[in-house]
Image (cartoon, rainbow over all chains, first blue to last red; front, side):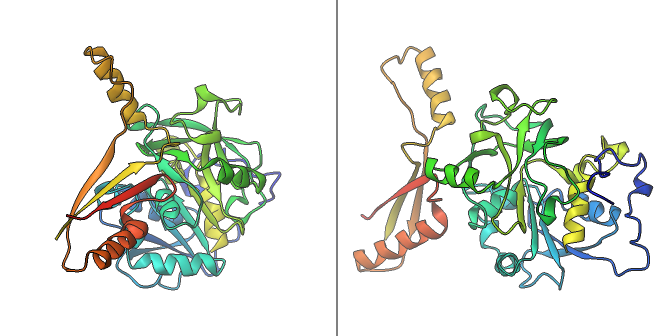
Length: 254
Length: 79
């Protein structure tokens, strides 16, 4: 699929989502790590399979990623969000393997609680504070795609507006001013909260995140963390297809 | 010995929870309470005699997991 032709408004049926040419070639293996308290692991596994990947569940006590070429840290409430969201999971045995995989250039996608883990282990900068409203927010938001030049966002287009659900209480991204400057200078912001026209502003920022940061990508472009849930938008029956191209990009990067 | 660890948000980090509590207090007539910051208090039972060695270990634990240095600072209090 060419970049110009790739829109998130893809085919209307989940059965049509396998990429052309996937048949016959070896399926890409993507690990989905399951922590005690993960609750989006099944969705992530299903989303990977929908775009033609081979989804491999990996228990958090595992010391390796089962030879997978990419890994998803799924959403949920690992360890009940004790201490800080993602803080306990960040010290699970599997995280050593995730770190090695990332440092070797392997693809890593952290969704929601998984993004919080990536911040806790320092693969991405900053930390999450409680939402400005102090509430758990569970609703659809608009997101502006800020990067399309890295493999993990390969099937998206810069400036494109996605609609994906968020479901979190700690998604108010914070970093010291000097870190924010570096993040912006390096183009590390992959996704920003925006309105339906793609305009960024306080009214369209659900949680108070600095500069409306909804997703970050590391310098090498192989680690992506995001608060919204692409794995929950991979079928018309569950509300839309805006998550498909993100998951597809990850699977292809495996 | 029992070691007390206090973790709080850094001064420059906005604490929406503390601010909400301050507003409730103001509504209840505690107008003189001009600021509230919410932190965590952890009580650790630590094996060890030498206070400085215990402090050093607990501080290491704070840096490694008990506090997030991006947003929080900690204080270790020995008996």
